[in-house]
Length: 270
Ligand SMILES: NC(=O)c1ccc[n+]([C@@H]2O[C@H](COP(=O)([O-])OP(=O)(O)OC[C@H]3O[C@@H](n4cnc5c(N)ncnc54)[C@H](O)[C@@H]3O)[C@@H](O)[C@H]2O)c1
Image 1: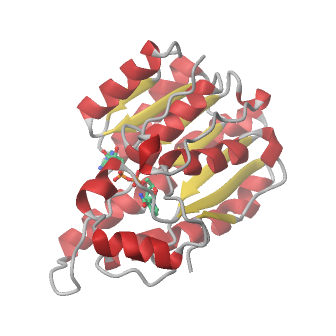
Image 2: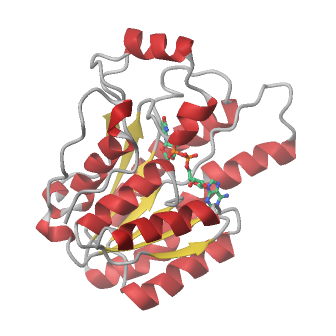
């Protein structure tokens, strides 16, 4: 079947080659939060191409429906998806439970959902702060809580938390997002030992600046282009598929002895 790329290869100078196939991912059940667009959608598509059974949640109904249709049109199994605002933990955990009833216990969880809305130190109210955490921090913990019993039944699992290099490079303009994303490394390392006893692996994948539609529309300008040239070791722009490749590896049995780590996919950002 043809590989499907959700972002235009024209955004990069080198067209993305097909994904490697991991036999261990075939028929595995995979849950992705925020899988309707951006990097999440690339991961949903990449897992579908592996023959995995994919479920995702997202608030963006049109984008989610279009992604599901695109996969079906390309000849892949229809993903399970539900409109779900991850700020509602009960709804998120119900989605995990309902999807598992249809697809089987999840051996892979990708905690991807986030929102990098900009804000200033002065503008943040306690309620806004809590809302940022409710999207960018809290859902990962409670999604883990929901999938772990199933992973224990399976005897293994792989949890991949999307971190960020932004806060590590002192990125400005989104302090609450930075706080939440920095907590991802703590989540990974704080649970690795406990989960490892049941052969459940947990890792952070931290992207550099990835050219999603949202990033291109909202934040990429001439100054940003210069910043990429100046800071990256590699000349090509990062695409969602580049992140999906690392996530596939960690989800597969090829990553069997990797846990408690942070893997950066940032083209060597300074
Ligand atoms: N794009 C980048 O350059 C970049 C850089 C560093 C880290 N990351 C991380 O990678 C991950 C994916 O980033 P992205 O750029 O694709 O993000 P994005 O904002 O483009 O997509 C996030 C997805 O989550 C969904 N979503 C947002 N709020 C939601 C909510 N309340 N409930 C359910 N769904 C919701 C959105 O509809 C969207 O489909 C995030 O964890 C992000 O922090 C991205």
